[in-house]
Length: 146
Image 1 (cartoon, rainbow, N blue to C red):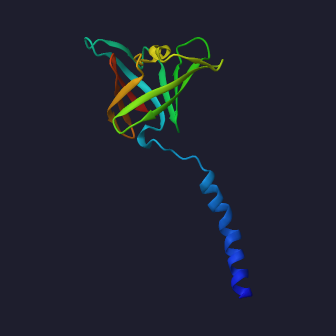
Image 2: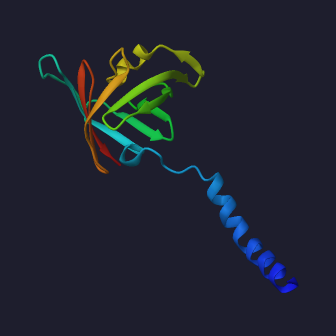
Image 3: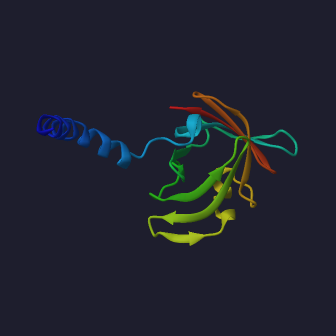
């Protein structure tokens, strides 16, 4: 009996760090949506006009856990927006928006500079590990993962 307790103690000591690291690890939870995305085309739904491309706008979305960062690298100031979101299989919903670096809460329509419609809802037209197309009530946005 003593040998079994001793063996179990050794096994537990060996496995405990591995088991504990699994419980604390924050892994990707959004499938192909997680990661860094560069907007390659911004198109108006009303008339099909191209508003911007990756050559005229430097807009990036970064996704991790339940946070979406939207950033325009053409902006002369080092600011960006962070938003909480939730998603379903076919839609993305913006919940709360914060402006960085001041950490103040802002309305969803402050994300218009990144192609977001005032209601904060997107439909996923395409989502793979390399490409994404989002559509909202005003725009269709095409991205590539980098």
